[in-house]
Image (cartoon, rainbow, N blue to C red; front, side, top):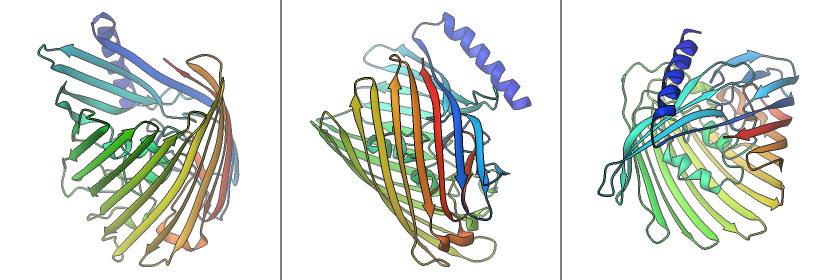
Length: 385
């Protein structure tokens, strides 16, 4: 409660100042709706969506097999942000970015997702602070027709496999200019409290990521790599909870083709996790590939995606998982739309105690099965400003 009050006070101060400042942009998203879900397995739990940062991230609650609830952030996290830019002359600009996520149905749980400042010019952009991991923003997200939404998009496997924490702390980020269709991005993350890694304070390790993309006409390709040491990668590997020497190496390769009437993407993801849990050493190698696409039809837009993966570790041999979703949008205006989504997740029973590969990824509270199948249906409304 105290943190929420402090966040509200800071936002009020920033907003009042922004209203009087030149070159300041206030933006945001808000969505809410109803979710009906079912989770298989004997040990069902609700997991706060790792993408919805403003909803008690990484918190578990006991629930029934079936669950119906009013939820916030069903399509994407609800954001309220401020951007400021100052012309320093000579082609140089100073940029500031402050963004917080919040829960629209409870009115609270503010969490800052981006707080960075930097310089930009012909050389590109340099940012310092908490900002989006290029492995996601300038990498995998570019090959996700769902736009990184909570509804069964590529953000689920990205987080669940430990490839990216999406909003890591303590970063120095470089974004290159676009040169003949080629662009690149890199980020270095520095540990603030080495050696204090715990289950509740995991965003403290060194890490880095690098991505490169090339686009020409309707065709785009990209690749990237990342490494996180004791980082806040919200992997589903319970064997690593509280481990002090976790290392996650991630890679991705993506390709997309825009046919005009439809856009199709394919993406391959891989993560290699090693560490020293409390009981024994465990190494986990996980790979997944997916295909997704979108079809615009006037006010209506259809988005679909399918992902399948395989995992090997010290205790499990080739456990498999799959996930698919179908989403429809109906635009009431340029900024307001209705949506409906169905998604299904199935995790191999052999995953056991080492955690799951995929999980339902909608809203602030998500039923998630220990093993077997889970599904969710959501309807709601979304507005951007």
